[in-house]
Image 1: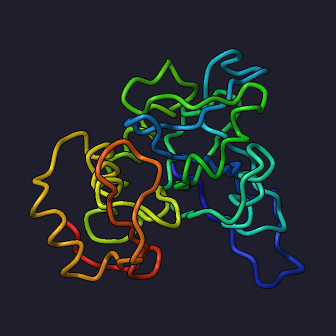
Image 2: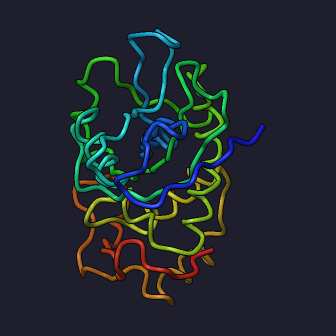
Image 3: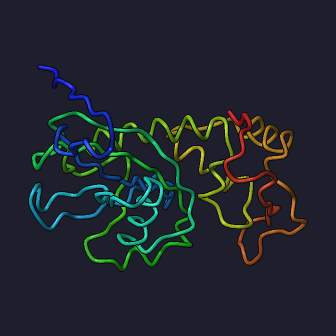
Length: 233
């Protein structure tokens, strides 16, 4: 039954207990690419509910912070990470999604270069897992993870979000490997590279790889701004 809405004529008359107030959380979907695999960072829960299960790092928001500030705080508190690509994903609000109370969560996904965040591996109860072979997750986090992969792929079709996975200088093979890993399929080498160059997505540094057993490859840097809208696929 729909709750009848009381009416108030002023702030002084307003009763903050007149309506039920759901709790609000943020959950972080943190992606990286490592060993030709799309990885998702998970934290093992150490308390009820779902103690012992893996979960997305998350936190209840504080009354005096915005959703984005809560996401940044949670990212730093749980992983030590900051200043990474972070974007709001979606809001998940099924009434039964959390056994504690009515909880609405706002998902944020972060994209990071593994070599720049290797210290995360040393944190207790924090591990990278293959996004394509996840363990049983707490709450509705499997649904959130599946949806986030779809959104990540869509984002990378029309933006330069893939820069987040790459070092400052990279080869065209590095760039294509990122796409093949995230989309879990191969792309035509010639067509893919032609589009990267034609749309100024990469910029030649004039340098080549060193200390390699094969023929040195040209090194490139990003040719546009991170997250800029541009058709790549």
